[in-house]
Image (tube, rainbow, N blue to C red; front, side, top):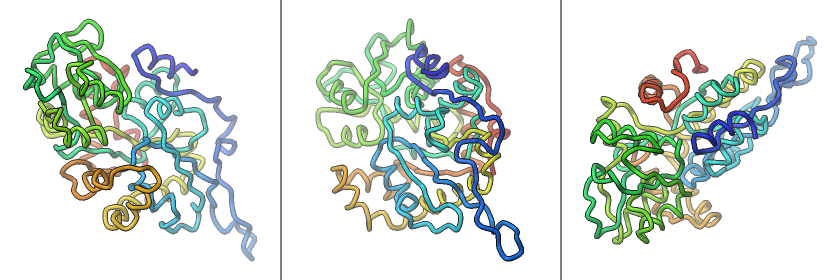
Amino acid sequence: MSAVALALGITMVAAACSGEPQDDAAAAPGGPATSEPDASGAPAGEVCDPINFATIDDDAHRVGWYALSNGLIESDILTDFNVSYLALPALAQAAGTGEYQMMQASLAVVPFARANAGLDFRFLGFGSGYGGSGPAFYVQADSDITSPEQFAGQTLGVQGFTSVFAREAQLVLAETYGLAFPIEGGDITWVELDPPTLLNAVKEGDIDGAVLAYQAAWLAQQDPALKNVGQLDAMYQEATDGSIPFGSAIIAENEYIEANSECVAEFQRMAAESNKYAEEHYTEFADEIVETTGVAPEYLEYYWATDENYMFYGGLEQEWVDSAQKFYDVMTEHGLYPEALKVEELIVE
């Protein structure tokens, strides 16, 4: 395990693994190839090596990347694009290994990777936004808890101690209710569980409450045994003066970007088009994903039918860039991240 993975393990979640730097840009993993010269002897243009891309193992994300991963977005230079869907710990551990040229990873990965392993990750886009009806605090339906303020002295479960959901919850509990937020020694006993186990733990009363998102949140909404006592995304927006609450960044190491600039730019174009395709056509292929994974079709509709719940991809729109900066600022201010990031200096346009 690399220095980053170890560092994040110490702060209660695995993060990123480092790889040996290449001697020069041309030797970087996934370095560009060129097509055969034309009649004049000049190269016809860059042809991208296969791109391996990792993202969160969530069926709504399979919708967002469907067009790109199934060859529905045409490109003259980027024709081989492979998507892997990984659980959050595995996704974090894969950063910097060289196995994936690009990743849709938690916002938490970048500051830890830069500070602890010297991995020069840059931002290609931002995503996984919440519209105000997504992540929320849930308790048993008959619980006396009616507000997040009452989690003082209680046990609260999250899907990852350094996940964005946990960090946003800590901020809300501190800024809105004045609760001490540290994972250890604060006003709350925190528990880290995977989403299905987390959902079941709060239903069974093994924990007093949980921060649920994505499919777990959707399932909780339908379950009469549970009740929502606070909409995390809406509370986060209020605590940060209207910032978009979101959890992921599309990232790549700068060495790879510099060696493959045309391919990176082409990926950014195709990512935006894949998102647009999903918004306009997801009902046409949702059944295919349902058949493959067994996900409830209603969940895909909940995620994609409107941006009221979730927003899949914001690209590098200024509002998303500003919101990312606000997130890193408040996390650093509270001592949750190792360094202050200047997002504008790390975006790739």
